[in-house]
Amino acid sequence: MKKVASGLIVAILILMVAACSSSGSGGSSENGSGGDQVVLTVFSSMEQEQEQAALQSVIDAFEEEHPNISVDLNTPSGGGYEDLMRVKMAANDMPDLFDTHGWAQLRYGEYVADLSDMEWVERLDPALEPILKDEDGKVYAYPLNQAKDGMTYNATLLEELGIEPPTTFSEFLEALEAVQEKTNGDVTPLWFPGGNPHSLAQFKDVMATPLLITHPDHDYSESLLNGSFDWTNYTYLPEVLLEMKEKGLLNEDVLTAMQPSAVELMAQKKIAFSFIGGSFGPEVSELNPEVKVGTLPALPIHEGDSPSWIGGERYTFAVSEQTPHLEEAKLFIEFLAQPENAKTIAEGTSLTAGLIDVDAENYYSEYYDVFSDVEVQPYFDRVFLPSGMWDVMGTTSAELLSGTLTPEQVSAEMEKEYLRLREQ
Image (cartoon, rainbow, N blue to C red):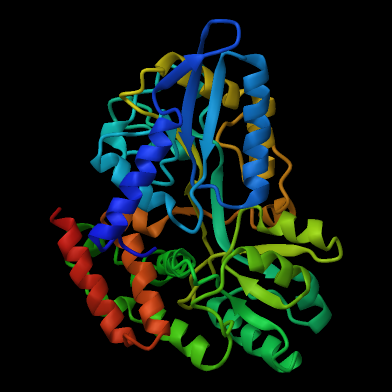
């Protein structure tokens, strides 16, 4: 994601905040029967249409059951969610409910109300407790689902080409070249919607775990946490990303392509691999039922290591500490946490529910079953990097692919920003 770098952009975002606020944040209006109509302003980072549709269906059911409450759902597109929320935090003008997208405690902790007195907390998956609950018992957000990230691939295409799904990262690189060779370049081996640098950051974040954490001989977790990490150990990731581009293994429009194009291209069997998750697979199969999208955990980079799912909270709703509609906001979350509604959203996002009593049918269930013994590791940036480094991973990757930075310069920039942001 690009940083908000100029006063003009900030001004535009502030105007957007003001416009959103006037549409219902903290507001109420008279309804037709003469009573107050409460409007809950809700912000989510959901971008994929199928995910939004699942959430909206539950919102519609809530509004039908509670006609005095309206839910104003906002889903900023193009990676704009994080920039907009930063402006709202700076203006101390938070929505009634909002998605913490992995930063429930570290970034949004001081802005959220404590939800520990709610019934669903007893049903919270223990795997999410360290992320959503602090040592004092405060619960920061309600999890709509939880992630198991890695990479996705066109299972139908690979079978037709006679290419086995890779089990290591080196096999993955070999598979990319095999796709290129067997299709005479008609299929993009690895496709990124790099018009939003988030997708490039996702690749770096997923693969940083097998590179720097999970192998005992390459475990830099302690130095990453105490600030002494040698960033030359990170250089492999920009090196391999640049190598893939130079070999023609990435889409030619990698720096301008946007995610909506991926569904149609994957359905046409024009893409072999991607790092797009969530409802991507179901959307592809809905467009072309003959195409099945598979998923793989983060593949080991070092010999002797094992694969890892990269996970944690995906979509959540926290309640603003300053909302004048705390009772209605909690009522909405209670509705979301009802098993049938939690199931609807989990299935609509093709992810596991955040509650232990919700068994959702998942598009990728057969793959999760195959890799059921694979451990889930937390998102690399959420544990080992200071807030703000996600932007740096995305922008430096884009600058690398545009020829502005070398792999070594990427690592140097990462180190500089890592040390700077640790001091903030």
